[in-house]
Length: 417
Image 1: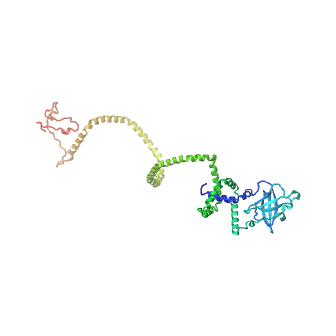
Image 2 (image 1 turned 135 degrees about the horizontal axis):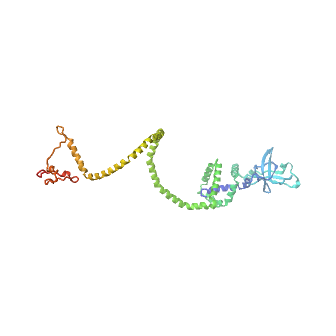
């Protein structure tokens, strides 16, 4: 209970103490179910504030209730519902007494004696009854506005606690604990620093907010009671253990959330990166749907095309089998060509230069339209070339190294270049 709810509970406690005398009548207003009942009628000149449901007592012990009150002429006819099998005799009497100073009454019944005989007609006459004492006579010291206000308060309080006997009993059982701080609260409210008028105004405003929502509040309190009973399982051991572990769990949860921060940032960046693609995919969805819809007809023809291609594929398989020996010969040819390419590779630049010279020689013509002309030049190698005699005057290498062919020059007859 916190400091803000203690004044409210204290105020309720004060009001409940004023109406605690109503507890027995509210708790058993209709008698015990299944018990035998007897009815007696009594005529009164004045019943005061007697109401239906009020107690009928004998020697201050409740023996029944007021079943109905009707007006016949100037007399009030009160029908009394009695429990048990005791009879009412001819010399019986009844009186309307005040149950408390709060305005609630009850009927005090004296059943009489068996010697007087049976009560005729089951009715007590006016001579056998005593009228009620008026509450206004007891409170005559108060002025009329005060009496009206007090009567209204008592009616409202009585109506508020009606049917809440179990709750009232539970409150009274815990009242000593609640009322332990009532003295401190009273001293605080009596202090000059306490704004009692403001507190009462706030309480009135708060109470007005609940007007019309009594059923909802009652349902909420019932559910809250069920929830608190569930929490109090095993004397609250489970919830106590849970609260003991809560700090470590909250710390771990905090660390987990902190660890999730960077992945969430990356996820946000990834989502932003995917946003254009997602938008494009959304825009392309109608086109994709159209392709799938229009592609149904061509795809339906694929089996027919496959059936037509099957003979050609069978012939192609046969041709591939016939070409297998040729493939083996081509493989051998490429192996020999690889060896030749290995010899000719270093002379690639010289071969390229040869074709460059050949293109240059045939690319230009003289004024007569003649292109390349071939002429014979007599040199020593012209003679020595047909004989196995080396010319002592020539220094040409008939097999120059790669890239050295253009560096060899043919000497003249006398050894000049």
